[in-house]
Image 1 (tube, rainbow, N blue to C red):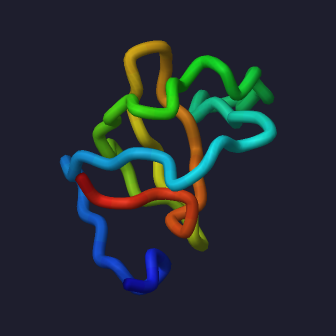
Image 2 (image 1 turned 90 degrees about the vertical axis):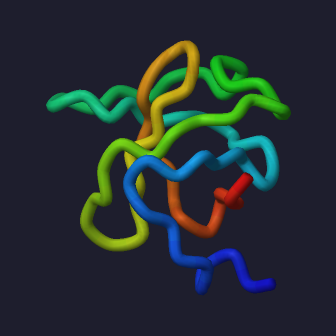
Length: 74
């Protein structure tokens, strides 16, 4: 299944498809954060839909902006 075509709504449980080189915080003033803040098996929850292909996803150690194509539904 094409991950980009998959409908992901607010509240949906998601996980990363593959490790990212870095994470971008979903704060009002976004900052780049190390990728190891989110484990490979960690499940997050979509908390906001942002412009373009970006979703705000809450994980155990923070909320990050992640491209829809980098996520899969759980």
